[in-house]
Image (cartoon, rainbow, N blue to C red; front, top):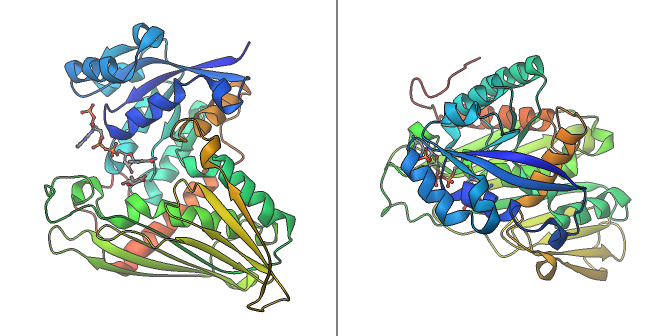
Length: 370
Ligand SMILES: NC(=O)C1=CN([C@@H]2O[C@H](COP(=O)(O)OP(=O)(O)OC[C@H]3O[C@@H](n4cnc5c(N)ncnc54)[C@H](OP(=O)(O)O)[C@@H]3O)[C@@H](O)[C@H]2O)C=CC1
Ligand SMILES: O=C1OC[C@@H](O)[C@H](O)[C@H]1O
């Protein structure tokens, strides 16, 4: 029998609906038979909204298993919930995680995990005290396409990574949407960096931070530039560069909310070849591996395409949920693939890029400050 994890969903919004639709798919459609998922509760700031959301997104037999709660605290304290998925805006993550952990629940919290590093470190401390599982929902790291790319990198066949370019941008139509939209509102941590920045960064983490030669070292230099929109002052375009001098490698990362990414939005340039990945880099459908005729040359001697679109059933948010279920089943408090240290690395970089870019969150938004 598979181990079944009982989920509570905090925040009846858009990404929560993507997550729930995926985890309620039959796990055999993704060749999983050791874990399964149930949704036993949905918490909203409004009980009626929670029930309407359940009626819309949870169908069939699963519909009767999910109870609606009119506050996040009530959901956190529900006795038939093992783990809570938090799908509220970034600046609310901290309070939602604290409520969940204090009620003894395991937690999967949307990206970015918190508004800053100090908040994240406080959460790690509380999770350790309560001995519960905690993970940022960096779903991209768990996709089969990502695992396949990691295998190519780890095999060493392309040599050493020299430069990684990655961009996630999108046109959010910022002149038309309300200034209270989460992508524009500084109270909700709006702007490109916190919302989209985790995605270019995850590839730098995969290819550089995870390189065994790196031994979990942080970049020797972080450089960040931000352009801010006059509409609300959040960053509309951000470029940040991470230097790993000890690896003689750099990551050039960018994100923005007014234009879309280029076609090949992720390129990893190694001494003996390239990995070329089409947009969107949060869930690439394929990637191309090129081997060079000789080190440093322009001539491609061999090219191979890896295709994943035809194999994906669902949106891809279920793979991270399977990881949570396996970790909880096995009594682990963090994931081996997306451990607490990787989110610390991410939040430290975001703090530094915001500092250099002059993006200060409004007073009171950051619940913990260094
Ligand atoms: N992994 C991924 O692919 C994606 C991740 N995300 C992440 O998910 C989080 C939520 O994004 P998204 O689903 O697009 O956001 P939505 O605006 O759709 O939903 C957020 C939900 O949070 C709750 N909420 C609590 N406080 C507030 C507040 N002050 N203002 C607005 N809503 C509030 C609301 O639920 P209620 O009314 O029920 O209380 C709302 O429905 C973000 O952190 C974002 O970065 C977003 C998109 C994709
Ligand atoms: O996580 C995300 O991925 C896709 C984007 O469109 C969205 O704003 C972001 O939150």
